[in-house]
Length: 217
Image (cartoon, one colour):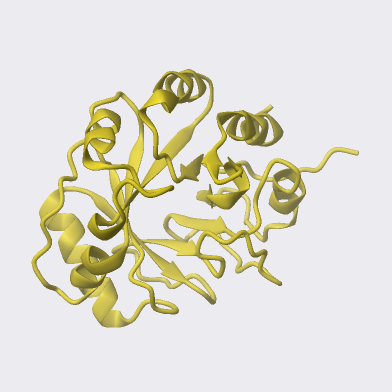
């Protein structure tokens, strides 16, 4: 039986942490609409999920759609309106993982100001209905990279700006999940996955391709 759904604008695969993945990333990006999420936290550079500065520069120089996912002190500084020193060359979007449940009016204002000053679109996380504040993009996230599937998904209507979903998505679940999402015809959205495209805590391009086939083919 076919599951019918509105396809996402693109899929964000988060956690790119090795330069040897680049040829496969380029190949997949030539065939499918993909955004590659690069986790950025100076305190964790070189750990799994967090590429070191040299690897990050290689990725930033590649002809790919990239988003920087700021974590740790840098993310907190953004939503507090403090100065942040981070190289955003090559990134079209910045997701600010500030570590709090939901995002306050102050978080939104400071995040939007940061994005405007760096020429990038900022995404913030929410844990309830998608906010109507269009100064930033919104990602529904109760998982925080752990693969936890939410009990319910918030709706998107055609008048809302760009919103995204994450949590429990992987090659085995993505197609049925998309069919269950309350996305109105004509609405634009993206999906994000991190743990669902890793094998033994290593980024797995084969899983990324399996997800793309399930969603777009």
